[in-house]
Length: 435
Image (cartoon, rainbow, N blue to C red):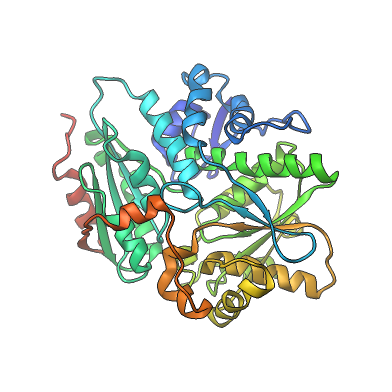
C-alpha cells in the first residue's frame, strides 16, 4: 500500500518512508491511497489485538510487518473503557489512562515504537519536532524519553497551557527539551511545519514529526474507535455514535478512518471550544482559518486545524463533507456550567475538553435525539485542577503516573515565534550530517 499527499504534488510513498518523514515534501499530509475494509464485526479481543487487526492492512509491505503485534502490545497496554453515564444511552469513552493522562498516549507510544524499529543502529539521531497545545507534547516526551537515537523539541504557547500541562512538558530532561514560544499554538504549528519543509535543514539533520499531522499518529488512533464500536455492536446490535472534542482534527479523522474501514461507527459529531473555524465551515461558510482564542479548553485552542486537509481529501466536495460531519462550538461559560453540573447529571468530573462533548450531547438530547452516544473523554480532569476544582468544589486527585511526573522538577526555555530562532535551536547540540 502506498500513501499520497493531500496536496497531490508528492509521488506515492511507501509507509515506512511516510512514517519517518512526518510531513510530505510538498507540505501536505500523508493519507492512505485506499482505505482497506475490516472483517465485520471484529471479534471481541483485547485493545492491542484490535489495534493489530486495524493496522495490519496498512503494514503489509512494511519492514515492521512482523513486529507490528509487539509494537501494538506495548503501545496499547492500557485499556480504553466505555463507561455508562447517569443518563440513558449515554457513554463516556475514557482515553486518559496512559502515562500522561491524555488520549495522545496511545499513538505517541505507537509512533515511538515504530520509528525505533525502523531506525538503523548506525543512523544519526532523529530530531522529533512537536508543536503542542498542551497534551501532545507530554505524550510524545513520555514515548521518546531516553529512547536511543531520538531527540525531542517541544514547542508550546507560553502562558496558554494549564500549569500542570506546562509541568508535564518540562519535567523530562535528557533527550527532551521544552520551548515556551511567545505566540499561540498556530504559531508553534507553523514553526514545526517550516522546519519539516526546510530541505536544506533536513539534508543536515534528520527530522520527523509526532503531531497529528503524522501518519503514525493518525492510523493507531483509529484502533480505539474500532474496538469500542465493535464491542458495543456485539452487545447492543446497533452502531455507537461518537462526539469527539477536537482542535487540530487528528482524533476526529481517526474516527472517520475507523468508520470507513467498516467498524460499526455511527454518526460523528465534533465539539470545539470558542475557536469556531470548524463550526463556521460546517454551518455553510467558506473555510477560513481564524485567529486563535485562548479558552478554558486550551488543548483545543486551534484556529487553523491542520487535519482539515485530510477531511477535504476524503470527500468529493464541501457539500459531501458537510453532510457527513457536524460541528458545534462551546464557549467558556458553557464549559463552566457543564463541569459544575456534571457530577450530579452524569456522575463524573470532566476535563474542560470533555465538557465540550457533554455540552453537545445535551444539545442533541434537547432536540429529541435518543440514539446511543459516546462522548470521548480526551484527558483526565486533574490536569486542569485550577479550572475544575473550584467548579466541583473538591480536589481531583491525579492518577499515579501523572502524580509522579508532577513530583519531578520542570523547566522550559523561552523562544520567540521566529523560524530563525527555531532553526538555531534545532542545529545546536545536534549531530549534523556532513553535506
